[in-house]
Image (cartoon, rainbow, N blue to C red; front, top):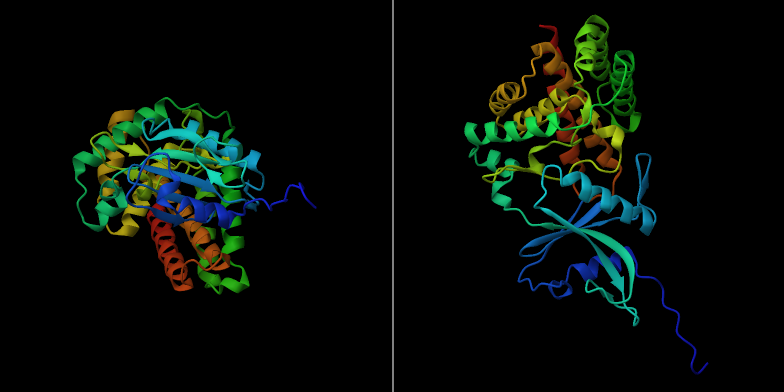
Length: 344
């Protein structure tokens, strides 16, 4: 019918990704463009910036299924990451739908979706890249430890009873075992049970070690995902990509989180980073702990990472399954090794 406005379907995720992959889509000119897909996001790297678009997904632990939910999470990601990377996290940028149905990042039309805009960091200075080159120095790690000590000192303490904290850890051990034992994953059940029983036995045998951490006010809102891929060793260390979508995952003991970072460095081939990092943190923070507690935390983190790795067998096939099976067994090796050290 003449004069009738043609109804257009709303742009899909694929439409948004295709637009954002084009160098000419950005307000500032860029000669190169790299797109990286993760489980819950797409990240688009220009010459100077990174833009993160959240997928419209829903899982047990997050819900990005609506534009409003994605906008709120982008704002939370910006707020939380500015704690450790204020100069990196720049803005929440609207992806606009123009009157003619085209997409743009220039503020023309109405907001269709939202992106976190970040300053791009030098890839060669990321800790995982430096580990691969064996180019990490003790001085750099000590500088990172001092920054993290200041961060945790300024973090809000979580009010939690010692019993509740131990119950939470016990629940995580049980959940890890339940998921890793699913028949479709075909992991060695006896080994999984042995690791989980040793972790549970530590909780039963050493409750005073956990209770002391609560009594000392050590349970705080931390980063939540402190891995080498999220640490940049520039002259002023930068830590990015905190776990923003669920606060419970950020409530932790700094020793647990630092032990996790040391564990991941160990897995990547530089176990010496832990003995550099943890004493430097202790010196800067005044925090002291018994060695078995550190190994217990590391064992539990390794079990969690094994669970997350094996879950990837259910994803969209972006990586070969062998990668995740290998990673799962590497984490189980670490879980077993560290719980044995916790008993020593």
